[in-house]
Amino acid sequence: MLELNKDNFKKEVLESSVPVLVDFFATWCGPCKMMMPIVEELAAGAGQNFKVAKINVDEANDLAQEYDVMSIPTFIVFKNGKETERVMGAQAKEKLLEILK
Image 1 (cartoon, rainbow, N blue to C red):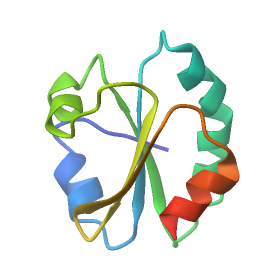
Image 2 (image 1 turned 180 degrees about the horizontal axis):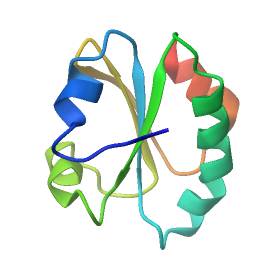
Image 3 (image 1 turned 90 degrees about the vertical axis):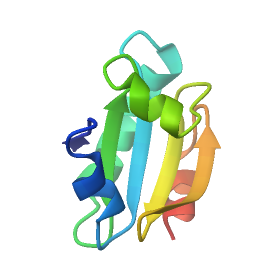
């Protein structure tokens, strides 16, 4: 799974040729920890269809602010460099797959 920061965000997300699911999380966040196995499972099954990446909001606060992330976890799907979907809080794997389509 991709670890994002301000140095690689543009290349890995905004310039990606496939949709990217970005998980805004923090290590101290209970629901974020609960979601981690699901996010890792999605990343393992992504293949060439999409990418899964995560941003630690404590380490990349500038990106969290830029995308108005007010609560975590927040999942944002980017397609062709634009935000297309956003869900907040713990989600079922099926819901995350659905917003990637």
